[in-house]
Amino acid sequence: MVEPAYLAAVRESYDTVAEEYVRIVPDRFAGDALGRGMLAAFAELVRANGERPVADLGCGPGHVTAHLAALGVPVFGVDLAPKMVEIARRRYPTLRFEVGSMTGLDLPDGHLGGIVAWWSIFHLPREALPAVFAEFHRTLTPGGSLLVGFHVGDEDLHPEHAYGHPVSYRAYLSPPDVISDLLHQAGLVVAARLIQEPVPGQKRPQACLLAGKPGRS
Ligand SMILES: C[S@@+](CC[C@H](N)C(=O)[O-])C[C@H]1O[C@@H](n2cnc3c(N)ncnc32)[C@H](O)[C@@H]1O
Image (cartoon, rainbow, N blue to C red; front, side, top):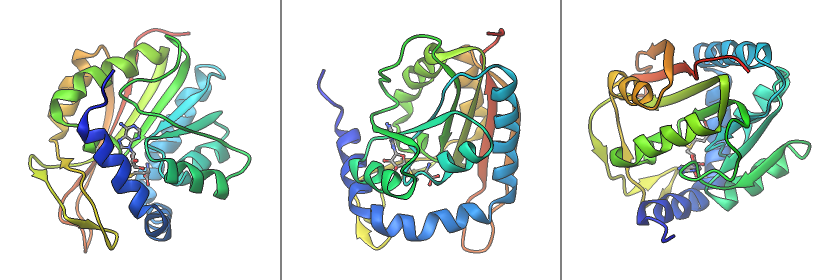
């Protein structure tokens, strides 16, 4: 199948910014107490539903993957950008990281106990979201959990630079209700939402939705 152009732009952009990204973003995550609270709840839910693997989709340099592993979650990371995967492997040599796309996961139906998409769905054009959420539903086991983080808004952003480098990706902001409705249409039930107001230096609120696939494995 021919790869959509937006995936090539995201891959090339994150390969370009990866070394600078890892110098900035993991420290920000270390200060995100509320986000880590949602990850703790997610970890508790997936552990209670069995020992199935958990995928961190769009894992970047792997700090969220490592955080979940430290919480006792059998997690692996997947990222579109080979440079991000190389850095994640270098930083966390005992964890598993693979190059891949959340638009088509090489995983059997019902394989995963949980999926985290932590600030990685916002590069998907809106028309791509229903198929990606259907892929999340397909690969989750009944009772499995999903945690998605994203920037709140309704604009499409076309930044020319990020992390000090030229980039060609686009970023599509979404209101939480829109993402919640799309998850519902994919058969996933939203259980909780966290909206963080912008801190100094941020322009927009941040949302984090915790959802589940009905049933129990
Ligand atoms: C803003 S970064 C977030 C990285 C990490 N989750 C974090 O919190 O720092 C977005 C990441 O998602 C990855 N990504 C974007 N679209 C993707 C896709 N379709 N499949 C897999 N990874 C993707 C990018 O390569 C990039 O590493």
